[in-house]
Each structure stands twice: as C-alpha cells, then as structure tokens.
Image (cartoon, rainbow, N blue to C red; front, top):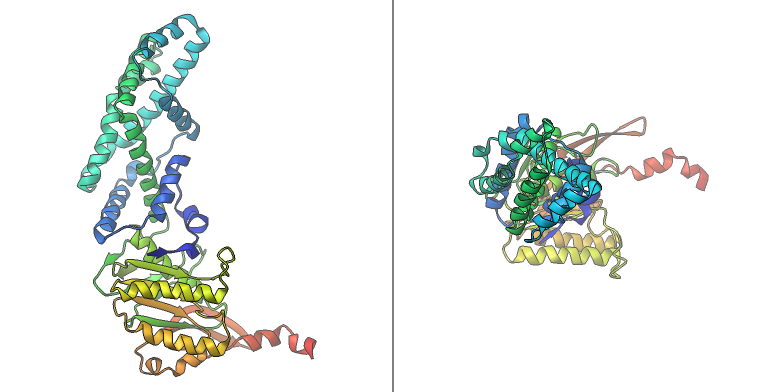
Length: 423
C-alpha cells in the first residue's frame, strides 16, 4: 500500500524534477514518480540507470532540441503511410505538385536534422557499457533504429543542398518499413522513457541528492532537509525505536521535517536520490503519509473518521508482518482532548508490537509524556527547539532528542495584544 497524496507529487515534486522537453516525456516522468517499485532489485536497477546517466553528464549536460520540431516530427512519423501504394502516391505528389513537394521536403529535412542531432550528439557518444545489462538492450534498440535511417548520409545531402526527390522517396520507404515493423512506435516508447530518466538525473545533480542504501532494519538519515526551501536547515535522524513521537510548538518545523523524511523514504523507494547527505532504510512494502489532513468531503468522512480509517489501513498492513513506514501529523486532532489522549495512548503502545515497521507521529498532547513506554524510552521522542528572547520565539529548526514542554500559544496571543483587546 502506498498513500502519499499529502506529498502533492504533481504540484510540488514534479516542478523540481521536470527537465523534459516535450509533453510525452513529461507524462512518462509523472508515471515514474507515481509508480511504486516492487522490490529492492527494482530500486537498484533504476538507481543504476540514473547513476550511468550522471556519469555520462559531459555528453548529456547540453541535451536539448526544439519542442516544436519534435512534436512535428512525431506527428509526421505517426501519420506516415506504410502501405504498398505509398511509394507511388509520393512520387506523383512530388512530380505534379510544387506546393506538396516543398511541404514534403521540409518534413523530411526536419525529421533528418532532429534525429541526426539525437544520434550524433547524444546516443552515439554514450558510454552504454556502464548501464545495467537489461537497460543496455533498450539503448541498443534506440541506437539501432536511429542508425537504420542512414541519417549521416541524408544529413550530408541536406547540408550540401543535394537532397532531391529521389532521396525523399528512398527515405520514405525506410520510414514505411520501420513503421510497419513497429520499430517507430518502439523508438518513441523507449525514447520518452530515456528522456524522463535524463530529467531525473539532472534533478539529482542539481539538488545534490544522494542515493540511499537498503538494509534489513536500520533507518537513518544524515543531514536530511526539505528541498523546496531556499536555505533549508538539515537534521540527523536515526531512531532506534519503531515508534517515534515528535513534539515542539507551532511553526518550529515539525511538518516541514515530516515532509522531508517522507520525501526521503518515498523518493528512495522509487529509485531516486534523496534530500539527505546519507540515507539508510529498510524496504517498506507500505508507505503512508498523512500531513495537513483535511476533511474528506467527497466521501463524507469527518476529519476524525478519516484519521481513524487511515490508521486502521496502516495497522492492517503491519499486522500481516509487512514492513510499514507511516507518518501521522498531529494524530487525532480531530476529536476532543480527552478522547485524543486516551486513544493516542492506546495507539502508540499498540504500534510498538509491529517491530518491522516505523511510525513517526507528531503531537501536541503533552499528556503522552506520562505514558510508561515514553518514560522508559521504549518510545523514542524528539522535539524541535525554540528559544524565547524578550518573550519573542526564536526558532532554530534543529531536531533534538527529548520532549518539548514549551507552549507558545499564550505567549503569541499576548504578544498580539489580544488579552487587552478582549478583556
């Protein structure tokens, strides 16, 4: 089970990672970002592809072309006839219609120049040996299809202004053969995926993400940070317990930290680099992130009932022995404080039994500090520090082990003069 709706993948993550040049590759990129991988082997396979692209960055760093050219060439190839009459019809068009002759010549020249650029500047220069063996086969298909168009020959004719009608007919036959055999559609499929991978490799380099390693049990993040922030504060996070309570006043950085950790886990599980200097984690078959939860109006669930259902879904997966990673931001804030304390106590105690899983829960319920498992440190506790200077909160955004008893609500209320205004 994967539920990362609260990470807002298309709205927030995609703009960071999108360096594609056409809508087809962008669509593939979105599917990669939303695709849960089934095993560590699948993750490492994607990691190795991206690492190989990063190693080829000297060749790919200037990867570009005209979006309009690609769209027009794509449309040209998709509509290119592949029946037996196409050669005869083309000859007649070139012979009797000057307008059609100029149009066809322009289309074929546009096709040759674009594909020649892709072949000469990028694909033919790639060090394909450093890619995973399975992906080398896909790259080989792309390279073979490009080579089969005899692009160097036709580009030379165009450059020397010797590209004639007979060459158009020759090239048209080549295209028809490849279209009929399915090579053209295969090319586009592999090419759009290739470009989506390039986009991810560019993003990993730009933001200095690092690839995580996967372990049996250890979960550790070194210098984890939120990549959306301009000057993010990084933190180390290596909990030795499977249930972690996170406290701290509002605005201290709890939700931002939860998102940063969530991104590390999720991006790592789809084979990407993560916003941390170093990351180690188990393979989680369930990833569930519940941050800034809202009422589920469409289904008719209240805020509290949504929280209950979300928790139930996670517990049901953990109860089967699966390794689950779940984040709950201010769990049970949708009910009264007496109920929240009682059921939160039951929850954190009960989650301790699922040793394979990791549960990170932020809370404002200071009563949980008195839970026996918290006192004996069977439940890990972390907090975000905040200092008061002349009754003004100074946020450090640094994570510390322990519990925060600081209550800023009354201080901020007083600082805004509301006590005087309301009495």
